[in-house]
Image (cartoon, rainbow, N blue to C red; front, side):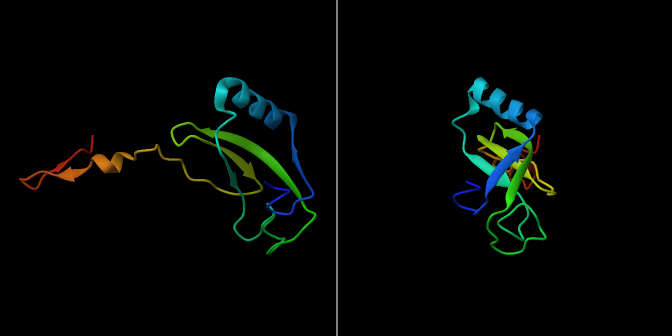
Length: 106
């Protein structure tokens, strides 16, 4: 994804991250789609490289499994993330009863 879509020269990851990826594959999650969490300012993971640079390096600093949403997140660069949601969010169970009381919160 990084080299073919974003234009990166290469992708790097330390041994801890590579071990996380191998464990996810060994545990049966290798078929999950990959979500890349990176800066919104650039196709690179570096917010200082604005727009669509080419020939840059992407460093995967962390890997997270979003098992409920069924994807793997590659965390690149200095970025904050939000928690993933399950396929069916709990909000879909919230409703109003005929008497006007909220039901489905807990």
